[in-house]
Length: 310
Image (cartoon, rainbow, N blue to C red; front, side, top):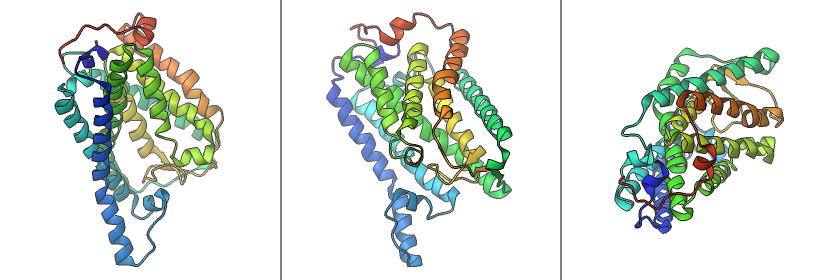
């Protein structure tokens, strides 16, 4: 069982706090390249040093910005590997899945299902109001985006999944010895990590329903499927398709995507719709394909004290 793989007498919760600090520190080390690039550009071009995250994001060509930002996730992922192996004495597989090996078919199925939903939802919005979008496709910058994004965005999304649906999910399970507490806590923390996104400032706090709801959805499919594969595929598709398909001036990243959204952001039914309608549809699809049962026990039940080998 997935959560039980992290249940060990020596896995005290303070180790997860220590491990989290190490992973955060590794991420900060990974931010040195973009910091150095900002210092160099301000010195070489005699411009003011940016005082906001938005200012930093707009200093460089968007593909360069994407590359520099994603470096921190490579370091963070290395931090996860170090913490899991040397602090908790587990394998990376043990915080990935309960299966004997990673099920790549599950990852790809989830990826393509959500990629399909994402493209379909964009087409629906585009056909309703095409005047709100402009075609900004440029072949060379887009191809560079495809290469950089395809390599680095899955590293970014996988890092976030390993932190929340893997490492912290098992950490809170060690603390609570039940399933509902890890599900709730990782969803709330995952959502709160997006609090500083420019989308929140533009749309208001109501968009946190989407972020927390997405965290809850990813936690549910991880617990029901006894592994992170579906969450890994979903998250990668969500960010990669978004980066390639459409961008706007008020999102975290501005990319050389195919379209640019010119509309003024507002939070309405589009924020609630994925959480209350689309995600339940996905849960139904996944549950039928993988034969999920015992929902109450898997999502809220107690965890056995039996120690399993990781």
